[in-house]
Image (cartoon, rainbow, N blue to C red; front, side, top):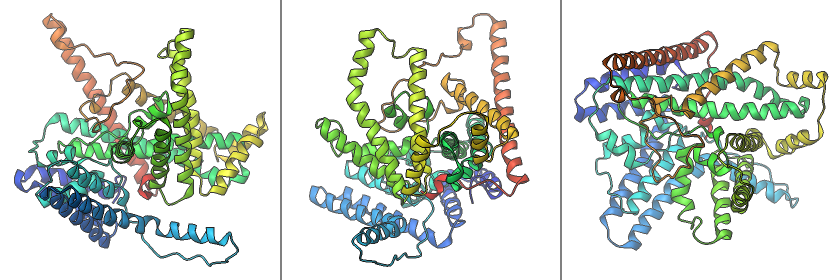
Length: 525
């Protein structure tokens, strides 16, 4: 059962309605049943895997908190890491690692036949494994363990974010699951608006762009340089809309029950550096790697050489987290290279700006920096979407050799994209809608997100443009002006709600009128 399915359209309202009708003390039971039912809709037997991971991490947390001896704590932590990560590695990476070893040995003419086990990749295993690890590590660092097994099991399996995140932290989600929530208009409206944006991004934007991207990558030999660049740009937007759309549907679903999940994306293509992009993209994953790997490795505290080594370790593993393919490793190493270049050039760049009296936050400079980052994102997207290392080589060969100009060259690119004039017009309309969503977020008009908590321990870079606050009715002295302000507020709310209804209606019309939308890209992770 996916978010973009008719089953979910029935499932979610039923869950929310029963949740608010039940007494507070048994609501966790209902949510746990609903969450396990949602997971079993994928594969009944895989529920025992998530239950086993839950039991192991729950017991480990209690054992770690019970002893005062540092060595025993480390032992329980190490055993938990071995069990949980070992399970993840077996189900997700066993065939990949075995195949890589065989390929390496065959370089020495050993002629070993490839072998692969028939292993099912459990949906969401990368997400809930990292969530349980964050809990056990936090308990090891001094956090009080959750003694109620039911609430902990719900923390691991909470259905809105179970399959593809956000990767929640125990200190954010568990207290909210314990808290008594009452239905209120603010949460219901905010949740509905967030879900509407998510459905629009996924069903209207991501699926529309995906068919052009697939056309190029399925027949790379027919594509020229322009088609490859266009496919990279479209896939960068598709991937963002697909995953941000899922995260927003998850956030909106939880918000309707009064639960505020971590915001997972913060306008990543507004980033002015790769470091800024990482802070805005898949925030729950990148902050997880920062807090549980980068900082324990020493972060930037042990000299520049150690910092660069840590960056490469983190992003190589971050790349492999996304999938069992060397292409993801290439993407991670590419990000690490750009981050390393920024580490070396950051001080020189700011010194140059000061010397030339260039306003680093000026509109023109910010736009140029954003354009550079987006071009780097296109290169990264091409690596991320490639099916093999060989195809990455083919892509870069196309970029630098198959270059041309003129109408025939443009027609060839459109042909590789399977795009006609009608598609171009629809693409323009879709991109305008996307820019409007960005504009709303950039200048503070999207209030539905305002109450979402910031990621734990994050220190986000200030936005290039500070959002201007809307006038408060408390500052309006005249009664007529106050009444006008109230009417304006209700009008904006009505328009926002109407647009949300329209967005969801359009998304579901696409779903019903066709054979369905495509699966979320991040389900493979």
